[in-house]
Length: 193
Length: 193
Image 1 (cartoon, each protein chain N blue to C red):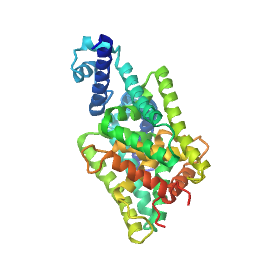
Image 2: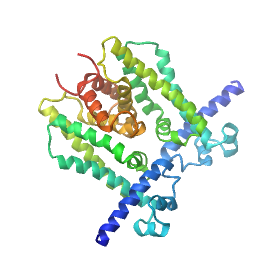
Image 3: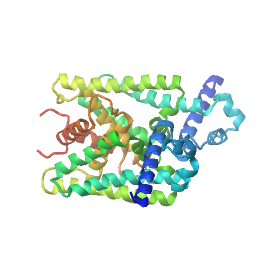
Image 4: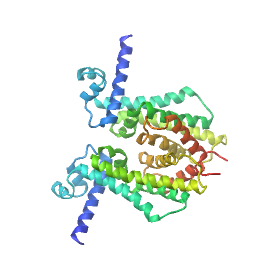
């Protein structure tokens, strides 16, 4: 394996290990020695990859939002309802595969250095925007009711994102089943007709 | 004013000041000197009311959940849809009046001392349970569709609770208008009929 690829892989391992550690122990409590241990490194080797805990915090944020954006991009343009279902599935699936990233992304955004925060904010806003556009597309083609698309988007993300507070990978429902349930509830509503 | 009532009032002031401080500066960063200053006290006087930052953390949690429970109790039993609308209004209104409490409640539950955590968990679970029962009542009387009532409850709280991440008291919409919007979306769904 080329040396550069190997280094890239090790960086990813450190980020994943740190995300898990921050989720379990708390970002503020964890120190660089523990971050190193979580990735099977000694501290001097860790500093070969990352200069600080702040820097790792940034990369966790970046990986998380990039994953969401990438999945959406790879699917191309779907019919609006289908596109929303897939977005909800993406968010819920990350609760299963990236729980550490999820908590860090939702709870430690404010601890990012100012420049990093601006970078992440831009990506996050663009992602929300792209989902808002799906809602608008569904309104234009008559699929969805004419409700404020920004608030619909925030409601959708609220339902899905909040799962980081209660979702357990070993619980009775898969993340896919929950996404499907929420999609049905959001589109068809709770009221019986 | 009797001395006991005055002490009780001062305690509330300290809790409110601390909640605001933790929201702005972060719970981990803030120290007892700053907590005292936020309540217009010097540190020795603060220790007259609270032994530690942990203790204040507990009281912020307790006040927040007690408020929600109390509002629900005072209304008595309403028709199911009406009852859900009111719960959503309660949560959103606290984003306006108790933003510090809200962030602390959602992000620092895990930092509570173990016994405190058990106390808060019990209250919080009872509150969720009471909302789940409203959903079940609405299913029994034919108002709501027969969807898993626990997941419906988690979706409802997701929509509302998540607003702590984006709601701004000086934004274009009142917390009441947002609650009303979310209630309509949750009950009637996004799909046009």
